[in-house]
Amino acid sequence: MLELKNITKDYPSGDGVVHALKGISIRFRESEFVSILGPSGCGKTTMLNIIGGLDQYTSGDLTIGGRSTKDYKDRDWDTYRNHSVGFVFQTYNLIPHQTVLQNVELAL
Image 1 (cartoon, helix red, strand yellow):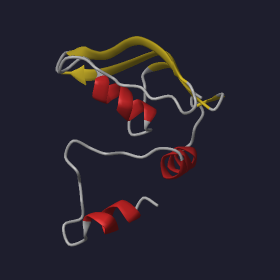
Image 2 (cartoon, one colour):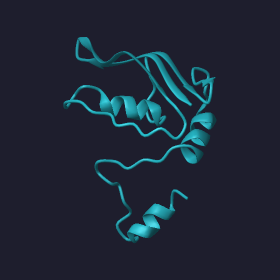
Image 3 (spheres, helix red, strand yellow):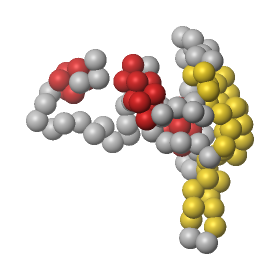
Image 4 (cartoon, one colour):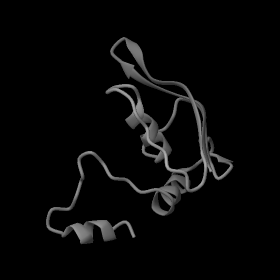
């Protein structure tokens, strides 16, 4: 199970701060299919980057399998990303000299 508990994400911007996520709480059960919908700029990508370990949250907690990520070290995030999640980016970031199959096999 994966759970976001009151997650906030702030980005510094000039003289102020942009609040990308403001207290998001959601629980994903094992084998559950979920769609994240919303208008541009509402925080969908920010939330997915936090879930995927690509970005850190400002406050709150992300728990993975019942374990808080507050004390995760780089090694913990690497293990999580390598063994528990997969990414398909809007811009695919494929290696041009490899086939599609070879690009997909890199994650296996």
